Length: 319
Image (cartoon, rainbow, N blue to C red; front, top):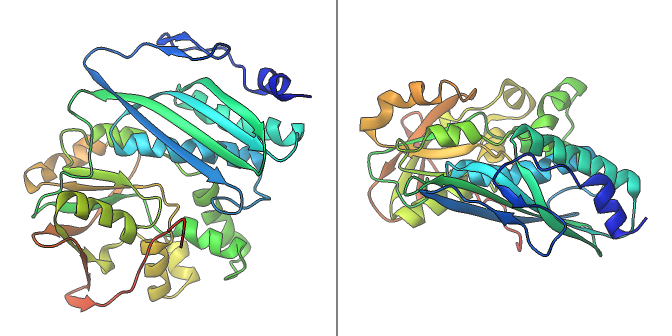
């Protein structure tokens, strides 16, 4: 079976969105962008052996390839609408393609995202996904809006995905129940779409946690020209993480492990009271873990009232 037969069999789906004027099959897709909105676009490439293990289940991989890109739209407060997919495969493996398409399209259907184009070619296994969404004009959540005095918050829990990956890489051993609890956090992250939209007009700055809190928070601090104080004792850590590793190891996984795909956001004090109401229907818990300070970009760590010296670094593709 060749490229076009594979595409027709596994990726050619009926477009349900009315804002898709022309879907796959021509040189370009034609899309209608609603008035008074801005287009939000994010593109990521996942490479075998770098972003995922070569033997990862293709259904889970298809799901995650889209989920991690939708997480970028969530961080901007955008509504997902369309996606393009480019697959590079070392050889035609119809079973693998069928599984990947199943996971990818299942999540696309859940978020009402239309697959509007892409490509398939031969080479080392890699996946490039480009998601497109819209956000009301001037209402996107940016990294550059943090101000001194803002509270720093995260959704969900941190470090579980990194714990699962450390087990798969043989760096530590989890028991069956522990692995069952944390593996979905690695392979099936939940993009916080509703939470991101609810934070429009409330959060000062936001981004998604993909490379580890220590690294990702640094992006906000540099873009906003501020510092941060993080309370280590306030980090939202799951019972499994507490049970599986020491306190210091848990900090390392939560702050530098990556693959969380939670939202980190800052909120001015005057908006603090509306957070519970705003996020009530998003289905996700959130935790205040620190505050923004005036000064040169950098992070101060504190455990209770005691300062802590930490040497942390998030994921770097070229390290």
